[in-house]
Length: 404
Ligand code: NAD
Image 1 (tube, rainbow, N blue to C red):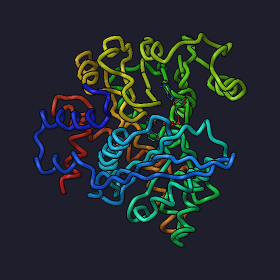
Image 2 (cartoon, protein in one colour):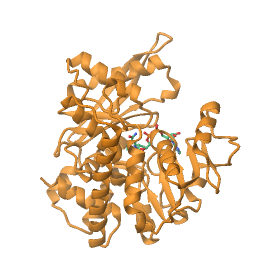
Image 3 (cartoon, rainbow, N blue to C red):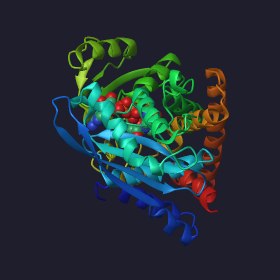
Image 4 (cartoon, rainbow, N blue to C red):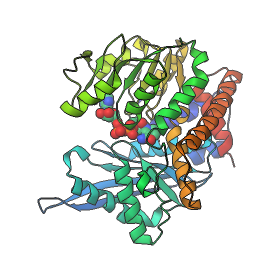
């Protein structure tokens, strides 16, 4: 299997079709995005020179509604990755039964190397190039890796200036002060926790589970706090440079404070430093990949020592690794279910922007839990009936909802 995430995504389609045959026309349609736009974004740098950044928006499927999906700023962003992420968004919105299709965006840039003003000009430049194909009824972007609520506010503001549409419904993941939803920052981690609660009996997990988390950004960092606050032990967590481990359980507030002060986890006094590769293979009850794609592959799947893999990142497990984990009885909760909390709360935000409403955090999380526990149950039952894994079960449920 190549390292191309879109090929992995297409392989996943074949994998589900082998256990439950779907209409060939549907599969052909989903194998190709409806539209791909590639843009160049000239940005005036602080020193006065112009740097031209490359950006993409892939609109995979609008069968169920406007395209929906995040925008990623990353030095390794590329069209195959964005295409795969857009494809998974189509499936994810169908799994969550949302009136949304699938899309995704990417910009080849390392935000850590940009000043705040350069980052703002890049964010606004992305919208200036793409606004004719965006909008509340067309395509509604959200945050993803390295894109923050502040970036969404700049993008939303630029869209309003260019189009006159001030509803705020063209972008989600905005700060509260700009029409954002209560609970949006926590939503992906919280949704992951609700799915874990609904499926934990599947992996016979103890009341206080030991948890490994790869990545401590919006998703991994919040998941760590949520799992810790519910009595689970976070025994290791990492960022792009490596991680820290303590079998007795890390104090996540201390880890965060240390990282904030030192900009690294190296030397954290409350645990031992480990690499990202080592983290994935530590014995644990639950492994939560929360960083990038293709982290669990045929090269390390035999050494994964977890009872459950809860995929809060998109595409962290390759199809070959999926088969190996399934054979070993490890329960893999697929990304299109496990991390759907983000897009569900984004859709709430879109809805209340359109209606001019604002919902409390309690209402947001009650609605989120109801959707995710219902869908987790449907997918669990479907995969049992098909005698297959949860990914194929989730794909099958989504494909039935897309066959319209
Ligand atoms: P983020 O930019 O906030 O955080 C990413 C984290 O991953 C950082 O801690 C970074 O240091 C770490 N990281 C980067 N490269 C790594 C590597 N090679 N090994 C280990 N860690 C690494 O991004 P995020 O929004 O938390 O997104 C993380 C994942 O969750 C992505 O796969 C994203 O597509 C997915 N996701 C995000 C959302 C959302 O609402 N933000 C929703 C659904 C899925």
